[in-house]
Image (tube, rainbow, N blue to C red; front, side, top):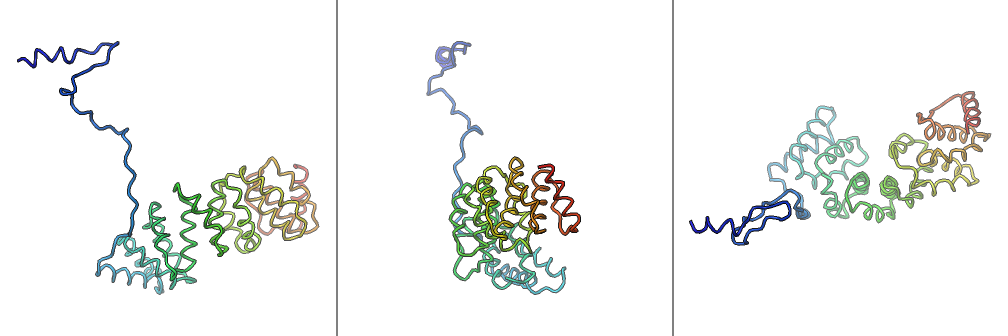
Length: 297
């Protein structure tokens, strides 16, 4: 009774000019809201462990992927590993060495693409030992390159100095996708060495890349004099050049060497008209297209 008489005095009705106030002893605790910041999740220190029976299942599944002669056998092995989930990651890492250079390795990468989540990439990298082969390191760097992890730029910058050129390339690719121009030399080295056989892969690696941040590193390459260097420069310009500077390709459209002319034509097609590059056009087509692009530039 007394409390009911005192309550209006302790908690007067709110008015537009006055915020409500209650004596602390009578206030209810404020409810938790979604706006409260969540504490960061502690980093995982180990992958889940396999039970003894499941370890045997995983080993059998890996053998099916490695040695299965029929697609159904390989598919069964993949399905079994996917069902076991994260716990098979360490065994899968060990299996890369046995499968390196075999067709089973692509299926193993498919498994890891699913069960190794982005948040565990740091744990995966830190779990590597000397027994693990570079093929696994290259795979993990590629995953880092395609990740949205905050630590990725630092990790990729450090990895770009690795002695394995393919690993350094994957790290440089990740940096290029983030607009870091210092990645250009490592990419140039791979373009010079592997374009002839792997141009489809290299083009796909940089599909959709933001060209602007890299162009200052690319355009000076076009001033080089030796044939192979010029050819590599044109191909780099196709990957990273910008339409506003496409006129720099004009001299190459008049080259006597058809390889240089075709590279310049393809760069124009990709950058300006957003068309697919030509594969093996005839000599007549190269001449006609080169003249057409010179007129446009």
